[in-house]
Length: 580
Image (cartoon, rainbow, N blue to C red; front, side):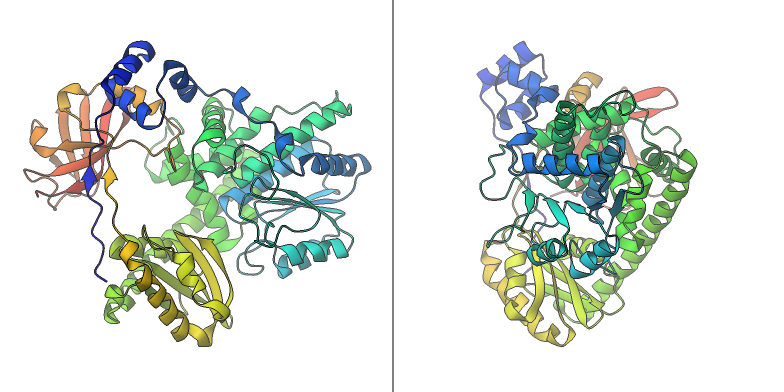
């Protein structure tokens, strides 16, 4: 199997000119923006208004979630009687933010330190989710009620064990249940059988937000709120929902887009929670800036998410939840420094692992295999997924990266379009201790002695699917001409935020031959073009290649550069291609 080429660029087909003109006239949008709205199925001015300014009245009733009524009744009873509650999360961003959100709300509802605790499993000690080791740790805390967030839907035996020990359980999750059903007890998951909730793709933190929305209402009906326990403003929790939803790469459509839209408003309106403020300050320091600028979904994806994730990848995910719960700026700054160190460590270790993996692949002649399997006892299991993603970008084929874990190999796989990597992992059958995932990404664990056989089965399964693997064209959102660029166009494009999975940030084609002059070189590494008055284009780390040659083409995103009170339109090169 030869490497798949980088996907070709194509421009979108011309839309209906009458519909485009109607949006331009009635919604006041630029023709490029009108075309982008039409491709998203938005064809009338009112739908455009709702898209640009989604209201919180568009949220679905949380009681439409199966199990919600029983869940809020059980939690309300626990709060009134002072029963001990443990919130059991996960060590990724979705899990740590969910844990912070629910813990913070329960504190606001009157649960004190003696009756409330959160628990985040340690990746290296407990493993992922509600494992037997996690159950052991939960039972040590002697809870009357365990509420899982962002995990637990497949932990049928583990939940049954908690209940056999006299612990009530509420499982809240958004992952796929097992085919044979969900755990016993109360379960809230829009994907479970018989759940009529209209939006099925919400994040784990989104499910937790639905829980506190319903619980606040039920407690209000019971006369719980008053002068001593003022009713919380749920808008103040939307920052956590936004961070989780973007970082967990769930689709930014429907209710998710609405939640992130309003979460970004909270993040920018302030005051921010001390932990988020400290993370942003460290991110700005790393970029050599003092002003954080406007927080966007890109800020979450590239600055907040990686730092929060680093806690669970490298050390202990509980640090991230503690940071998000901290109300002391000094303590938040200390914790943020720990996460900054772990994130730096994650990058350093990840870069070294990637170089080692490339060396092993190319020395072993594995780069032409239908599916690449690379293993080492020195690989860090918290980073194997990141390395697998980078290897897929390099070799354009499925990759399974394995790290030693006791007497087992622990693996993380990533794939290319057309090859279901979890199907390829499943070819290991009974060789696997456990596995799971979806077509683009999966994970597994198996005995160390089975490496050769697992590798063979994985490669054969990828080979059988290889005919389906084609590099799909990347459809750009239009072609730019330097004379047509201004602040009004950029502002309209940015109003389409939040960007993310299934509402991707628009990118456009611009050609070197259309630019008025060649670029200048900055710091021997970067390129900068003067496109038009008040408009510049930057290509980070593009100096020395083909990007400056006549006939080159660029895929760019639009934005602003605000520096020392001066605001200019800035095109950022996402990808450059030399002359054809």
